[in-house]
Length: 251
Image 1 (spheres, helix red, strand yellow):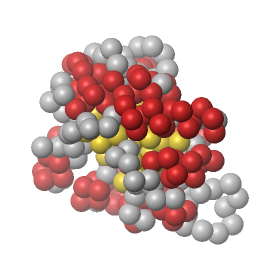
Image 2: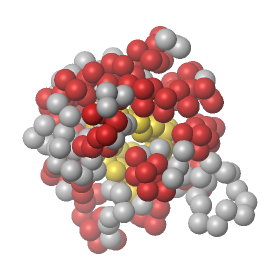
Image 3: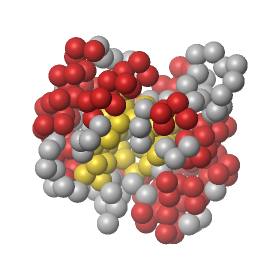
């Protein structure tokens, strides 16, 4: 049985006051849920707050990015070992916004993935295609190459310590969502791609869907055989909405 995971990605949102209420709402609202791992990934300045609010609870904490370097003259960067100091478990790697806006290449993403695994963090590796790429019929080519960049660098065995998130770029923040069948098709492709390298890892790895998941569509998406939860953007900023998505994954 693969682990169901619902991970909230706050992106560049939050304040100390709002975060406190949101975190308390998530902790209380998901208490007692079985069969799902709940995760919150905040901006770097709020990791200390996550540590204080989530330590000793059932909700795991995570970051949204890290540096591929461990230490040194890299002004503005945050290393995996620094994240470990905050007791984090998860870190998002290669989000589409990091790739598209900040120019992260698949090589950089692979290096960051390795840095996370080496430090004992669980990377949530994001892959996904743009609307133009989907319309051109090259979805599998795009996500396959993004995945191959990581497995070619660290080996398929390293995926055993990770999570994958399929995030169709055309369905992030646009209100559009892939149908459950469209999402399942890509999830199955990714699992089969991994199985061609290591069947045991493929059978166990959790693959999340990350394209505008909401309480209203979560249960239908999570019912697909290869969708093991969600990477949640905007809905993770409302505790009631996020909690309902967690409940859908636990069903």
